[in-house]
Length: 530
Image (cartoon, rainbow, N blue to C red; front, side):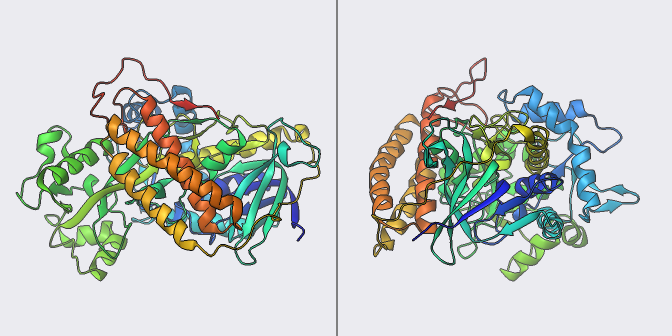
């Protein structure tokens, strides 16, 4: 059967904050196609509870936001990137206000909240559901723009490079992507002069994660297979406070609950345990410190969870600040105004990813990346709270501007070969995918989690090698499905995380290993070359 080919000026993979920001900027003069896996709102942006960090307060300065970011990043940030992003933050907020995002206000100013690691109140927010409001505003603008086509239910399989051209080229030039149409089961070729990868993070590599189900590292894995370098994949951020509930697997209790006075207790001893780990900053210590403290309490006392308690605050204050969380918890029989919330750490953010420069360019000509799938140098060894959405807006726009400014240099795509399905059949063994998926997520949680050892990492590497052969064999024999595509990408990302973790012989930021507890004097990025 012939592969359907679609051609546009620019292809954007991902319909979250980074992808839609890029699309809206590009649409000034380009025809843009945005591909989404699943629905247009199934990415991480819609789930973001916290907010967006920007210097908007009279007593705050760019220099202080830069310093806070660099301290959290534990010496691994690239200062030029941190300056680039933070200086563009007020402009990014202004654009969102113009798009109609209903940020909370205080009088005539935007209301600012404070989160762990920040020296000032600088988080603009929409109650405790900022991401949903931002996603809705961006999507509305994109849907109303005649130059943007939004195509949901497309799972990208691989990038199209010169190797897929009818006339073979080893240049590494990217010409779009092959994507599975989830409704028909056919693989389509989406061809473009430039491609922006905004496919999100790899959180679902882990058993416990606050990331949406589709966060399977597709963009990172596709770029790596096409020949792009990745950086700092061992830097996986674990959010300290995810709701512990057997029915609800990934409901996040935002950082702002601690920012507004929430306290952590050991449910067995009743102790407020952060006094032992970080007596000065207590619950407002950076996420890696709080996550390790909770992990330590859970392991030491054999607990399933710890307690996060803000019930000492007036009930109206709690409900007013956290309406979404309050309502969700009440539905589960937990009243946060009168008692504690059971919480556990969970994978939360992929700080590493595809290496990019300040224009969002990757190593591959024609391929840009923005957002959680990229490593720009902003986050370093640990992301500061609420810098993530900010990175999406700044780099989504930077990539789009670079494409527009250099448009004359983007050649028309060559004829592309059809997707070859001649040697595959439909699978009758879906159980293999489920088994491998579960296995990866479990050993990554146990061996490559918050606290690591070389022995555990080597065990994980051994299992990844065994699974790699099995998955490649399966991929070679059966028609692709979204589950198979995701499994292949999960395995690829697990491999990159473990390889990166084994290369770093120190503890820094989010990478904490018992075999190398000290931090080197000079921080170096872990860059893997395909």
